[in-house]
Length: 377
Image 1 (cartoon, rainbow, N blue to C red):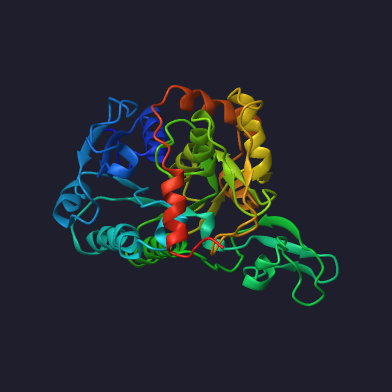
Image 2 (cartoon, rainbow, N blue to C red):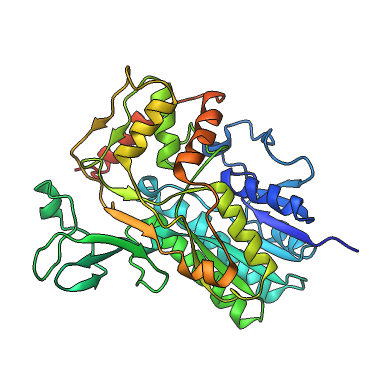
């Protein structure tokens, strides 16, 4: 029996490489298509040591139409993970983010529309950042999807969301896929565009497609020297360099930290089933953790609780949200997904990875760049 061939764009990266491992375990032949961007992989652009040896690596950019077309003609499924990542950086490197994320996805979509290929399914990595603020509950007015906090509120250091009608403090709820999308950064806007381009083009041409909205993914292989990667990796890098993690606002803002193995689970389930075709599904845990709790856990795991303390800045960044965690009812019902690694179980995996990595802490320079563009207030 001939093996199915899978193309993973961005497959040499943190999330993509884990998906590659899962596909190979599932019996796929895998082609990794990645430009090995220096900000993530370093200047030498060498094949990452962690990348599965059974995967073929093609070092090209998704905007390279001819190169991508030649690969598409050889594969049965596409997992589109390629994207420039980083909320803060996207707010001033606007053209580069739009080109990498939106134009790159548009090239893929046009090839699916115009060229001869055998692609039977497409999965696209989307993002919780599409939502903007999460869903909340007011004790008087029920479920709400509030806008961003006003600059005036943030300048008063009044951090929590409040009902626009009665001014009561709102309680975070699980954010479901039907919540209206309100991207609050260039990065988030490009992720929404990636999702919509894939779903719309694939629907028009009869190609089953699924968009998976990842929440805050963490785990081994996360770049510790990229100051625009996930917050757990950034904080780990700071702590291991005996530097204080810098936390905006008061540290009580919360996210849904999801182990990378559960992203792999979601992708494989979506490939195996047609029940989610044409759908958007959250990939998270359904629980939330504050950044301050994350920091203290990392300090304990890394053995630095007595020597390093978090720096609570009391400042805010443009576009930052307060709370967002996933409602995972739909992916549970549709695909049988169940989070397999809790944050307490999974954080040691990141810590073990971090302890063995060469670290180049660039957070101070990244912070200075945000400040120079007046994005920290």
